[in-house]
Length: 395
Image 1 (cartoon, helix red, strand yellow):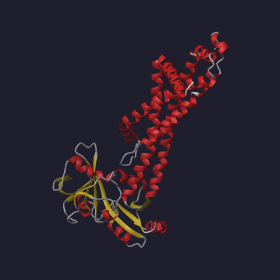
Image 2: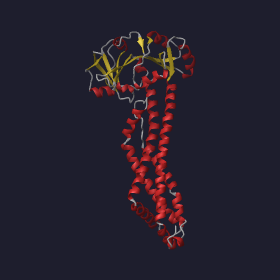
Image 3: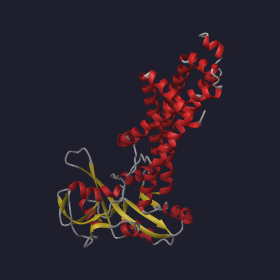
Image 4: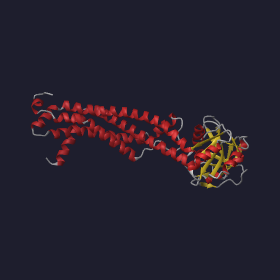
């Protein structure tokens, strides 16, 4: 028998067997599809969350964060996602830090979140000076420019703020009853800066009645190997808390491992259920079509051919399920993103469920391989059918 004829016969047999019980077949395909979509989404979440976190931390531009006494990781995550820091440090601390020989660049900022009119959300306002751009060489202006003066009633808007409020250069924005002219609009960065209103530092301090106070100081060193002695000296200053951003990153990822393990366990349960469906379909097919297999054996078909006939069902079920799963993954990507942001306490700005073609193909290949493994036993059982017992109606 030619190869083409053999493949047509195998495909015809498999399709007939699957079409005979359409409901059972469709439910199995749906189960495989859901399992594929879940596995792809979990892998996409694992990769996307880390990429977004790395991007957010790198975009901050500094390696060390100095805040008022308190929980350092809470302060760092508040800065990452945009929120008010209830601890303050004096301006003189910044002047002391920039005099240290290890410091390459440093920036000071004053961060406050103001509730909107409905009180359901907050608008982040950050007071900055010229050193802000020095630590962020990748930041550019889509339109406009830097503040005209340190005491100007002007604002620089993040990309999303400008888009949402439909503001352009020269328009005004109100902050705590005071009007500010829009001086510049930043490029889209994919970080918390996109949703921030930037004000001149001294103006921001005066507006929120915190003169000579800062919420944080970002520091970049010439050599991070000098960080240990430098941080030890900073702790000699009362009421300071110092944290390396790499430590914050590691802490967040350690917490994420528990969530990822739980999701993977849930995905494994769904995948096992789908594999049991494929196994059951193939096994039922063998039991239902034993007489036909006996006839084929009597006509001289080898056991390997019968093995291929049954195994092809597992292949077609898995391929159909993977195609359905790929569609579900792409269609529900937005819902998965929403679920992550609604569930987790801290989620970095950017896409945290990064479903790529490589992720979908890798998940699909793994599911197909497991489905084929699940179909081995039924296919093996079919290859051992005896022509004599089958023609007599035996099992």
